[in-house]
Length: 193
Ligand code: SF4
Ligand code: SF4
Image (cartoon, rainbow, N blue to C red):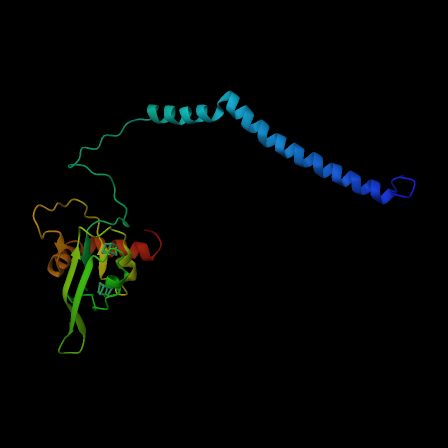
C-alpha cells in the first residue's frame, strides 16, 4: 500500500490469496458440518446398521450337530499344548528353556540334565493349564518346533492336579497328533496355513 492508501499490485494479489484460502477453509468446515447434519437428520448411519441386521436375519441358518459334527478348525488354532518327537522317536526338546522364559503367564516349569552322550534333555516339563492363556508365544520361541499348540479344545479338569500337563502327557498328545501337527507346521512354514 502506498502512502495514499492505494493498494499496489503485489498487495492486491496477496489479499486475493488470503481470501481464497479463507473461502476454502470455510467451505471445508461447512462440508464436514453439513455432512454430519445430513447424516443426523436422515439417520443414514442408523439405516445402514439396520440394513446389516436385516441381511444377517435373512441369511440361511446353518445348524451344526455337535459333537457329531464340528466346524473346520484353523491349522493355527491354539488349543492344548503338546511336545513333539522326531520320526525316530527322539524328543525334539533340547531343554533350552526359551519357552519357559517367554511365557507371559509363567505357566511352564522346566528342569534339565545332561545325558551320558553330552546332549541336554528335560527331566521335568510341566505346563499349568490354569495359568496358560494359549497365547502361542512358547511355540514361536521354540527353535526346534518341539512345543506346539494343537487343535485339541475339548478337555476338562475334574480333580486337583489334572491342570498340570506333565512331560509324559505332553509327549503322549504330541505323538498321537503328530501327522496332523507335522502337516500344519509344513503349511504354516510355507505360508499357506
Ligand atoms: S501358550 Fe502362552 S501362556 Fe500358554 S504356556 Fe505357551 S507361552 Fe505360556
Ligand atoms: S520346548 Fe522348545 S523352547 Fe521349550 S525348552 Fe524345549 S526346545 Fe526349548
